[in-house]
Image 1 (cartoon, rainbow, N blue to C red):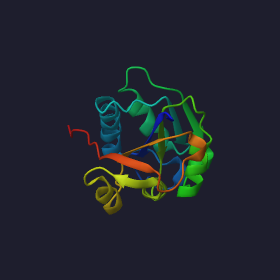
Image 2 (image 1 turned 90 degrees about the vertical axis):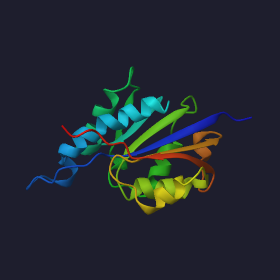
Image 3 (image 1 turned 90 degrees about the horizontal axis):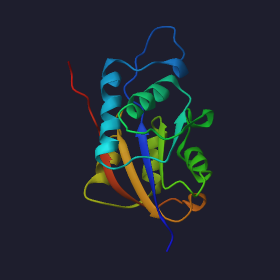
Image 4 (image 1 turned 45 degrees about the vertical axis):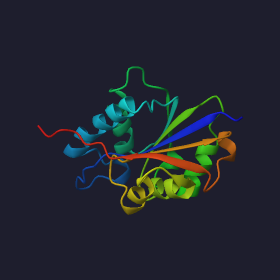
Length: 173
């Protein structure tokens, strides 16, 4: 039987909109600075520790991963891929299919609508109300967890099980 694979999809935390700053360079806002570490704590508590991270090159995605990673005991290597910035679901899927088969759990840090569309594209079955929640809204800091058996290179639409959908939030001071 093929090994179980797990794709963890994380939408970046809430960003700021500073005047005159290009979209790619927008930083996290105050809520994002609270929520990104909460995402890392959720990953740890849910035992969704990745073996590899694929992250958009946008500042808000990099900052989200850095703050989330600080909550993990031993963060995995991260690849910052410019193709993931504002990518559509099929482009994200192409990047995921390039992951080496030695990787069991992959974390993808990206942007909406691409991350939501990818989650919905891959989901064939879902546990509980996870699919309804992912369809209704995929807010900042949302995390979807998809599993399936087989190599990354053959991951196809409708073949994954959506096992979890969470929206970790940090505490306000």
